[in-house]
Image (cartoon, rainbow, N blue to C red; front, side, top):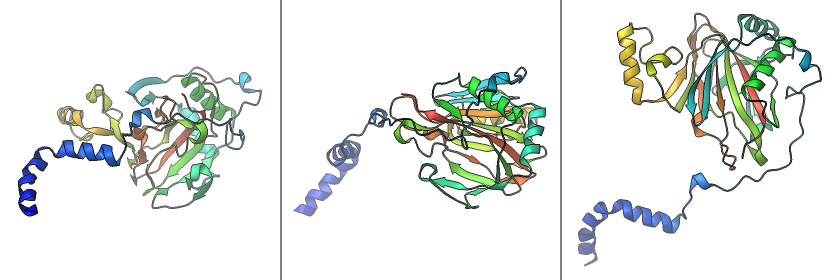
Length: 298
């Protein structure tokens, strides 16, 4: 009798499987609306450490940085992702290459919100230089601060130059390793300093939505066929119209900026900011990380 009941009930299960699953989910797994997560439990501001943060020293007002010459394009509004042309000048790029050359160290991976670190070339294979705060470097710090609107309780971290030799890469990761207590790495810049005659090495965001005029964005991001003729490029842009993800090309002087945390009072990071430095196939890539640490908006 029980076997006959099961056979008779199977068609009903397939017809109403989604409703049954929803009901069981509500019974055994209480509803969890991720968009209304628990409010952020904010702690007092952590101690500011000058060895990691580019804190003002009273002389920044006297800096003579000249006029900025960049152009900016909004790639995404949620999360905010902005692309910059000519964010750093040729002179600034040469200066960064010069002051970093003799101080490179093997890059490491941080854990537990930056409390521990280790080296694992399968995950991250590059060299890093924590550059001194010369006048040229401080002008770049000022520019990054101005772009973000002089936010309260947000500080630029000490700038780091990263060098990727052939085979160098950084697997997919988040910059917001921790937002503990309402404080964390709120934003990131990836600035390309060197990469002439380079193959590979692009910065990939596989979860970002491509928006806007794809044919124009193909100037800055990899499309289906960047080496084909104009007609093929047009077709490639149209093909990528409905695809998710973007790989930003290594164009020296240009940069991409993104926000790491939602401003909804939960302290949650954006999953769309999951990104990677793709392997360098030929040549040497040099990039500049500009991270901002501070209060997560609520």
